[in-house]
Structure formats: C-alpha cells, structure tokens
Amino acid sequence: MLALGIYDKLTPGDLTGGAHIAGTGTIDASGEVGAIGGIRQKMYGARDAGATWFLAPAANCDEVVGHVPAGLHVAKVGTLDQALADVRDIAAHRTSGLATCTAK
Image 1: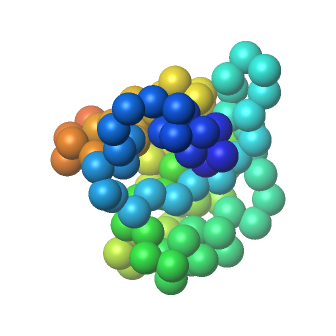
Image 2: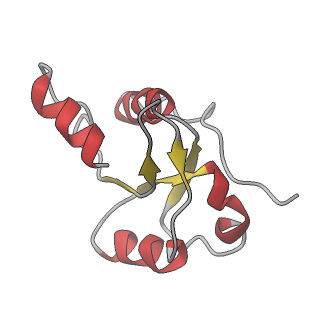
C-alpha cells in the first residue's frame, strides 16, 4: 500500500477515484507481493476504518477464505502491477473481473 501511495502521489490524478481501499503485504525488488501475518485482524481493522476493498497477498488466501468481514470485498494480488491495475479497476467500478481468494 505504501508503494501504491507513492505511485499515486507521483502521478497525475487520483488513483483510487475516491474509493476507500486498504491492503497489506510485502513487496520485493521485482514487484512480487508476499505474505504477511495477522491478515484477519487487518481486514477487520480496514473495514472498521471505512474500507470497502482490501488487497490481500495471494499467498495469504488460505487465511482470507471464510474470514472476510461483512461489507468488505477482497481482491488477491501477486504483483505490484496487478495491485495497481486492481486499484484502477476499483476506481472505475470494474470489479467483476478482479481475482479473489477462493477455497481450495
């Protein structure tokens, strides 16, 4: 989310289009998004802070499925480029094609 925030500040326009989007994850030098701890608590905290969307690392999907708080939509991301594209799609209300966490 820090990388997306920096991108938003350095480029013209409002990346989120006013959508309240939260998320978490690590990022490496190649742009891969990695897993983190405490994702269930982070989703509830994001929802309680007003977020309607949450970007979750694909590697955390097993912890997301069945634990998404009411009122929060979760998109799974594997790279910074995918997260950027997802934020743009959320801002444009094109959310039907976003990848989500599903049960295995």
